Image (tube, rainbow, N blue to C red; front, side):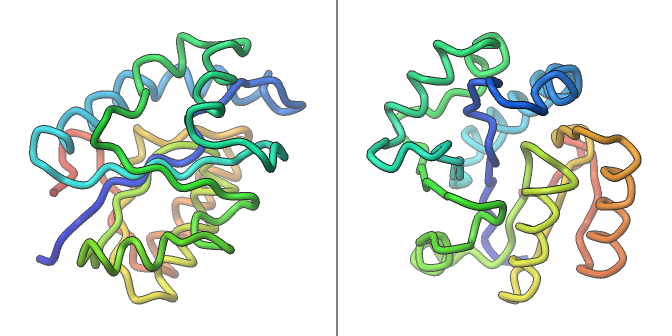
Length: 178
């Protein structure tokens, strides 16, 4: 087994967007498990990389994104997952964590060949990121209890697509291997 990294997708979020009402209940369910996963990765010295939307704020940096999320509608969903001083942070503008970001270069510099993807939204950013990881010949693990959805039926289909079409390992937080 090669080196792994934990990628936390779009969890630094103000929840001030049109789908927030559908997303928040699912996000609330995954926060405790996601916090445990982040804690395990940190304890095992696994790189923790936050890849987050900039929400159209092109002058923003990760500190401003964190501040905005903590001032948003649901800081209780953000606070347990905040980056620490060792966390890496990549800002993205579209669904995939790889699209027009330096993530591929960063993973190469860290000698990572397998990503563990957690965060939101399962049927959007997580799915597209898993596909982009797969086409880059990276292994993918998705802990099903650490991904949030807007539409449960689409999330179930997305997880099955990741498993079947991309060879992703579907696990629970407590069975993820680092």
